[in-house]
Amino acid sequence: MNVTRDLFNDVMVPNYSPSAVIPVKGLGSRLWDQTGTEYIDFAGGIAVNALGHCHPELVKTLKHQGETLWHLSNVLTNEPALRLAKKLVDATFAEKVFFANSGAEANEAALKLARRYALEQFGEHKNQIIAFNQGFHGRTFFTVTVGGQASYSDGFGPKPGNIDHLDYNDLASLESMISDKTCAVMIEPLQGEGGVVSPSAEFIKGVRALCDKHNALLIFDEVQTGVGRTGDLYAYMGLDVTPDILTSAKALGGGFPIAAMLTTTAIASHLKVGTHGSTYGGNPLACAVAETVLDIVNTPEVLSGVKQKALLFRQGLEAINQKYDCFGEIRGKGLLIGAVLSEKFAGRARDFLVESANEQLMCLVAGASVVRFTPSLIISDEDIKQGLVRFERAVAKVVNG
Ligand code: PLP
Image 1: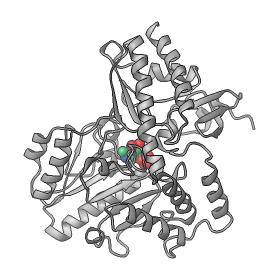
Image 2 (image 1 turned 135 degrees about the horizontal axis):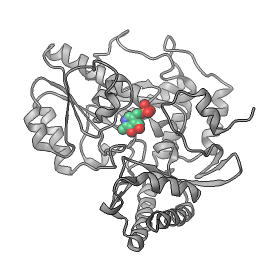
Image 3 (image 1 turned 30 degrees about the horizontal axis):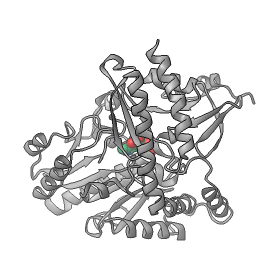
Image 4 (image 1 turned 90 degrees about the vertical axis):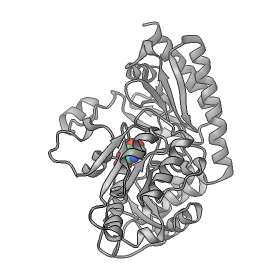
């Protein structure tokens, strides 16, 4: 069959608008398209391919588990799921794990758990969920409504109720809105899709304190920041603030779909038998791959490597900015980096992405005015340097018109 980009328009639901390039092969931080053209990958499948493409250890695990046992359903438990859960519990604040298949599903579980916990522990009146403008938590109707972009949740009829949004980093607003009717505050400990925005130390610590004061659960959505992305295994570890519930997906499977919701025993006890579930969640194939991802990422070499590579990346971007004066700020943490376009180029992040692809470099945007980079956590220094040479050519094209 002749597979072309036109076929997408013929057979796919039109909710995406993919690039004309169709990659057919990946290795490490390189991709090749149908014509054999090679690309450097600074996008990493939107912060998913934490160990690059086709990492030999992941391939080995996938092959081994693929020849052993794929799927059972949650009528039966399985060894890879229990091993992965034990490792997640040992590595974090959490005592209990629920597995799902995507970030949205892990967040859906977190929100349902928070609502149920509040209902059973305090009563029906405690059901308000507070989240933040520009936040992103997935596309199920509950999670997209909790997300802070009405344009994503509008147009589908009546929304789940009692969800309020405030500005990120605005502690005073939270202080005036939160009350004993608040059941949970959901927040990304570094907003990814919303423009790569870090919380101030005062804000994130203040959010924790206000949640404690009002018996509201603090949910950290670490779907994008988790599994080494910021240089800590989870971003909360670098903020010195511990959530009550944490969600992880994306990098957890290194490209194989899996997600997890982590919490304490006391909170988890409210999801009794039959209250929630997933057919695929925690299947042996996904859990085996994620166990290998965790074994590799949760090491001092990889985590300190992220910090060192982030420095190299930022220095390169600053050098480009010195020449072309197109960024107002380079921000983010670890290998979740946002280059914020200066006033002159505001709204044109997509142009930088398109020119990058023309220069054989894959990158991302985060909103209209931020170019985002989420490469493999183990990208070689050489690939970073070569990728930035390509990015500079793209920048030059945009800047020089
Ligand atoms: N939460 C955050 C912070 C995300 O960045 C994303 C995806 O970009 C999601 C949730 C949704 O994850 P998924 O697309 O796997 O459902």
